Image (cartoon, rainbow, N blue to C red; front, side):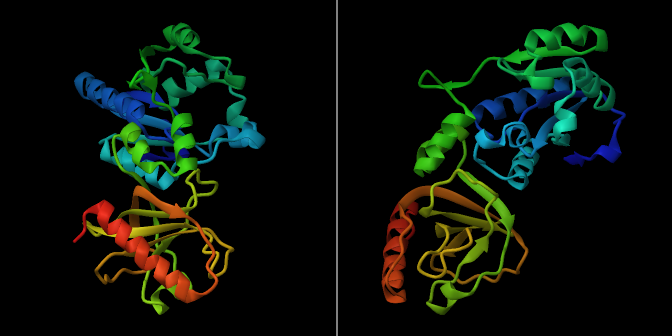
Length: 306
């Protein structure tokens, strides 16, 4: 998979494309991506995903911008798993937001050589979202662009949506989220050296900085850490570590039953299996140690670690 930058435009190969935030990267998204890939292969074209950074509402309506489900880094990693050929990340700003629907379609077809656009039924585009599916089909006639609409994917007669996933994340219900995603919820990031408090009290942790404004509920989770092709069971804390300092947000993972060597700034993935408890401030380190022991026991039971 190649991540295209503005300097790479225009590209030379014709593409089958889709466009969206893909923040949730749920079953509805993966269905569209699979269709894009299959169609591109069948038609002898390249598959292309166009996404945004930051979320458009962060620029257009910052007061009501949604919290993040995942990071750009995690999203790109998941797109790579789908064997997509090209990804173009639009640096979304007010200039881009002011493109008219026709300017937007011209951009897709001339700069990104999109010949077939596959999108969800409620897709909007262009200045103030004035363009919809019918607009795209009409304008597309002038630019050799075919538009295919995908109906919503449902579970138990309920549409899978990023909005629904955000609600569940705020409750810490990662178990239910996994059904909507078709995978275990995860965050990818570089290891960030902490203050070594965990190591000093006998529970060393691997730490990453979470993406800004993550939807996930603060607390302790059971899950896994993945790096160098290996997966390890872990107890995970997402929060400000109130007993230690209570300032900066971290995702900390303590690998259960094994000591591993891992270098700073190495890329890892942290998978959240189930919620264990709320974040809590303890009166002293001994109380914290006893609680961590209890958390590990609960995590081992959930993860079926012996």
